[in-house]
Structure formats: structure tokens, C-alpha cells
Image (cartoon, rainbow, N blue to C red):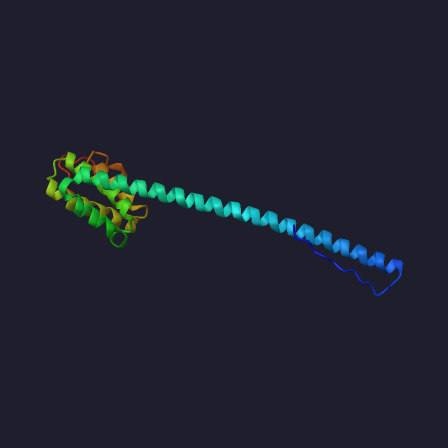
Length: 181
């Protein structure tokens, strides 16, 4: 244990002078000890908070990596041999439509599956999907909201759900052969 040695000297060489100096030294020692205790508690709290932040960052990194892996796998399943083009587009999505690569792939996978179920040819899936996402980005930029919400509203139109489009100034009632793209 480290020890601090305090030498007490008093101008007043009487017993009262030394007692006064000793009281002052004890008061200083108690005050310094309390300050060190408070500092140690604050340092402990700061270390715990930093540890929690690092733990969350690590957990988020693992979750994001897992989500990215999942979306790439889904792109390969939906777009088949054309998935490389969709994955390449996703890497440019931050500049083009303001989406992370993973967010772009997740939207593309939903839209691509929808188009695929509507009978769109495999070689056209990527192009039509990209156009739909760009249209959603334009609508969200003009009318507010997220690109994801706009793309989902556009995708809903293919399933006969037209009400979500009204938010973007589009009013449709029924359209059996909807061709947006």
C-alpha cells in the first residue's frame, strides 16, 4: 500500500499551535481521502459505462454482419445468377438512394420476390427492382418519410393495396395490370 507522509510544522511552537496544525492536517487528509474516493467511484462508473458501450458496439457489429450475410443469401435466392448485379448495386446505394448496402439488398429482395411472383423474367428482375427502389427514394425525398416506406407502398400496389400510395400523391383505385416500371 502506498503511504503519504505529512510533516507538520507550526509557527506557533506551543501545544495549541501544534494541535491546530494537526487538526488542519487531519482535515486535509480526510478531504483528500474523500476526493480520492469520489474520483475512484467516478472512474469505476466511467469504466463500466465504457465497457457497456464497447459491448454494445461488439454486439451491433455481430448483428449487422449477420444481417448482411442473410441479405446476401436472400439476394442469391431471389435473383439467382443475376444476384451479383444486385449486390454490386447495393454497394453504390449510399450515394445513389441514401441506403446502406444491407438496407438496399433487403428492399431489393422483397421487391424482387414480388416481381418474380408477378412473372417478371429473371434477367429483368434486377433492373425493375432497382427502378422501383429509385422511385421510392424519389418519392420519399419529395414527400418525406423513409425510402423503405415508399418502396413498400409501391410494392403494395402490386398486391392491390393502393391506400399507402396516397401519402406520395398517387391515387389509384384498381389496376389489374399495374405497370409502374
